[in-house]
Length: 90
Image (cartoon, rainbow, N blue to C red; front, side):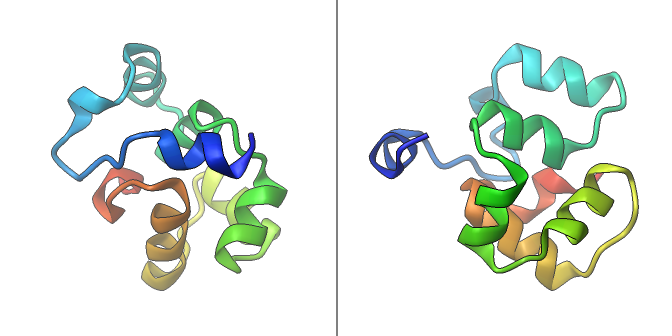
């Protein structure tokens, strides 16, 4: 996704799940990691997200597999996805 298209997407806060499409909410409810569901909805690859945030691709992969990562890394990933930190925590 081009940066200009990404910038046109809405910011979503922690209680604003109404801003997430139903298919994303359904994936999360079915057990998919929120990071992966939101990242795919934003059409951002793991590599692109790593480049935008400075978080290693391996950390992103671990988080999407259910491993715990640092709060700082989650904060950076949330900022890169334009969502509030709490949306990335189960």
